[in-house]
Amino acid sequence: MEQYLYIALFAPLVGSLVAALFAQSSKNIFTGIFTSTLIFISFVSSIILLYYVNANTIVNVEMMDWISAGNLSISFGFVVDQVSVIMMVTVTLVSTVVHVYSIGYMEHDESFNRFFSYLSAFVFSMMILVMSDNFLGLFIGWEGVGLCSWLLIGFWYKKTSASWAANEAFIMNRIADLGMLMGIFLIYWNIGSLQYDIVFASIVNLDIKIVSWIGIFLFIGAMGKSAQFPLHTWLADAMEGPTPVSALIHAATMVTAGVYLIVRAGEIYTLIPNVGMFIASLGAFVAVFAASMALVNRDLKRIIAYSTLSQLGYMFVAAGLGAYWIALFHLMTHAFFKSLLFLGAGNVMHAMNNELDIKKMGGLYKAMRPTAILMGIASVALAGIYPLAGFFSKDKILEVAFNDGSYILWAALFVGAGLTAFYSFRLIMLVFFGDKVHEKFGIVPHEAKPFVIYALTPLALLAIVAGFFEHSFYEFTTQLLADYKFTLDHSVVINLIFATSAIALSGIIFAVYKYIRGGFSEKIENWRIYKLLLNQYYIPKLYEVCIIKPFATLSRFAWLNIDNKIVDASVDMIAKTICSSGEKAREMQSGNLSSMLRWMVVGIIVLLVLAIFYRPMV
Image (cartoon, rainbow, N blue to C red; front, side, top):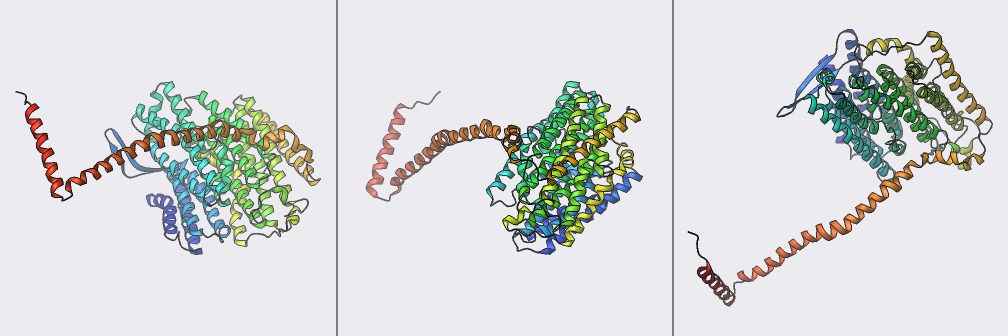
């Protein structure tokens, strides 16, 4: 099985390097086909490894020695176990669809080849992250994902907004990654190793305060990567990148890395339930916080981005309460329907000449029926309606909160479920039904190419059926992850399911009813709560006023008064002094006999003075 591990890991890298060779060349469809094929090969290898791990045991490969300094010895090793292989299959499956979709989406872009090089490198970095058998290898993949996200979010770097968004994402994640690094340092300092198996076997012997700090610092890293409050603002702004990038970031790669870290380090968080409760509480807050912003936003991609942020909150609730396999299950099902939503949104953007304001659309169903059906399926799954995948995974998280006695968390998630259903179908109604507002702007919509629609079909099928694999998923993942014990009566579970389904259906019905009748009055836009939500609770403004502008002012002061007047002035003075001395010294070598005789006299005088006044010590 070792060869399949290497194929799954390095196939995306080969694709990225080959595409990079043609990065400066004009568009070559072969680049897209070649990289997509290699990602598909990685997916097939991951499936083979999944079957092998299920039937046999984990695959552990030590490729070579990596770092050896003093007592520090870290190998370049990889592990394929019940957790990493689920991530591998999810990442490569979604990435294959995204790559194929991108062939059509990016066909007119002058940097077509460069895009596929970055996209495959993104997948390779994520595979390093999930397959590494130690925390430092995970961190290398972690940083690789961050770098590739910067390249892809700012892919259209000539747009100021795209460059700004890429820098925001990169800097925000660097802040969080400092916390993660401190957690890794604490692990090595107290255990002497970063290998997962050694760390998890030894962590129980540490003082609980140290374990708590390790858990806190690791979670700070997860907060940045998964855009949890207050490090969340970059996620919506990341929509400046091409839509396939948004699908990959939000469904299978970057933002899921934080959840994966908590699940992977579950044996640490099991020892510190107080930290776990904080993670769950923050997740429940973010679930409602993000959903509320999606209620009023008019940007097609940002609405879906806020949805991702909200669903990540659900995953962190499950992980924080110790239901690691449920968090991973929702991560997987969410990847299918969320990538489907984003790629469907990409079809709408192309049809609307890159218009993103959903209130300038309307009535697109007739012209874009396949896309409308696909996005409808994804929205129903997102809302958690039986029998689609979201029903099984999201409802399970609400059951966990209720089972744990965390009724406030359950209430928050319950409200979030209703908001999710409403904003999902608000989007569907404003885009595909109602008046054809787009006609006022002279836009003639058209459906995407057939192969693009066919590429999305696997995601639609999985969004429908993935939930039925819940039992198999549970049995497979709990071979490695701690089991979560439910103590609720069957009747209570039925009531919870009924209540959650009822509020989700109510949200859908209310959205359909309201927007089929023309939507809300424009007077609502004058409400303070509406403006508060539309401006993201003024948090970006707060960051700008309290952090960005003072930092910019301080930087300008340091540049003008310290860098220019002290540092540069000192260096310039030294340079001018040396230059001036050199100019003066040139007179000694002028070749003029009179001048040289004068310098000889000066030299003799100096020697005589030294001879008179200098007395050697005895």
